[in-house]
Image 1 (cartoon, rainbow, N blue to C red):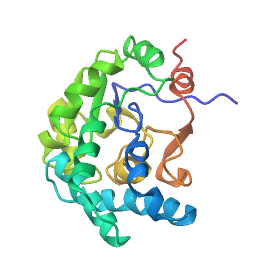
Image 2 (image 1 turned 30 degrees about the vertical axis):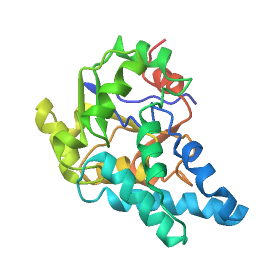
Image 3 (image 1 turned 90 degrees about the horizontal axis):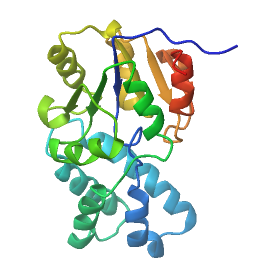
Length: 225
């Protein structure tokens, strides 16, 4: 049976990972792979992901989040977090582009609904990323503006306040349940699309999200041809 989603007033998005291809491993793996065996390497990146999550629970500029996260994960594994590695991570993030399946369906979506970005990064990063998506955005909100990263309630409240909107006005699309859908469920957002790109180990539908594997599928669920 085809999936149908409620028609929202706004479609909001997580950006990094959901729309922009998250390529952290491409940068970091060459720095550590010769010092870890295959099993340790996989665990290193799982732990690195969790430490980044822990870091964003207190606001500081995104470049510092990247620096502190890398320093902490290296310390846990007894590795040296060289300054040039940190600089490479901070530089390479700004080179990331859209997932190959994003641009055309996002343009099509923008013809029918105002698009809103709610991103766990600072203005500098979004000013770089949004033009690469090639679709018009009604509003772009960042952790810098909100002075909080998702999953902090302050980040979602900031979006609602800026748009003078309510949770029921949104379809929110994210590839990160821990950052987005879990807190949004508790805040009363009921129209949630989990765009599964493999970041989360499992889909947890009990928190209200519907699983999709592409924006094309979401467009179809919204009745967009």
